[in-house]
Length: 425
Image (cartoon, rainbow, N blue to C red; front, side, top):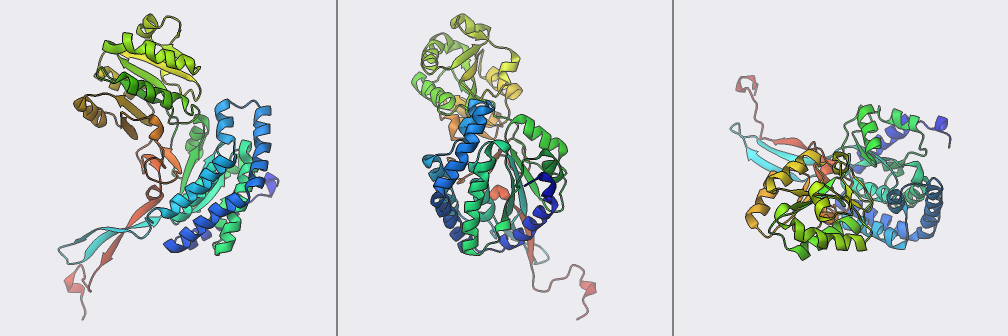
């Protein structure tokens, strides 16, 4: 379909109309739809994987980064995980309609809060085709509709996944427009989409820093921002070395192209001479390039010297910056200066230091003696996540169902009036 043939305003309006229907769905209806969506993904596995192969081939021709290609690839295991994520969402409590904070006012009215959907969520994302089903599932369970604008590198994959989800929607009688894929990757269409504040309630971009900054700078609609994941592991002077190395290996090498992978290792000066050679041994075995500060290079003379740019970089590959810090305060100051408010890890056996780190570091996920890779909606008990917010309004950290709702005031009375003199009977 040519970009000139696409009326993005009409697509957004239809999605808005569908959001009124999804907002009124019962929990049972939403859960049934989610199970049907999971089944439809697996029933269409052959087609989805075949279409994905076209995208992967094109990505390799364009020489996209290994991180981008890793995020793009679909196979049986990854498709199964996408289907399982939808089933997990079905098992989660439904936030819509939840009433809380009921209190009686002096006027005798009862005041409370009720959770309601946001409306239409626009997802603008690169590479990751799993976002198509994750976003669809989370938006549906939270009573929203979703307008999906994927990147050109995953166009065939996203189209095939959406077609499968529409089969499920038709089966359960929910408007297919509640999950709308923009059928082009033309930049002009996205520009217009970001002006449709009458139909779209929230924009969530997922991708590189350039994409997110473009969306923020051009949107009339509120945007959830996640510029990058510069995640740190601080090895305190009381750390258990084996524990620290295991967390480092998992955090840096298990999947280096994701936003919760480690990018910087901070080591207390009292243990650096002993710890760094051991850590370097494992990193070298796993082909991780180390870049270090002056003190690090004195201990590991064969590594590249860091610059400040290294400490601010989200590598998304097998490279890690290393810095020896004088004390705990210097570690926290480094995180505050170079971090991106994503995920920070401390490795320590000192309970007081651990508690200080939890209080002093205000990234969206702060971890004691556990891998940065746990900074994920599924691992944190949210089911699938729609994104990770590194700004504090209106959500912070991995965003699950509750983050896709807001609250309205509800007031229940027995005929109370604010001004008694206005009563006529």
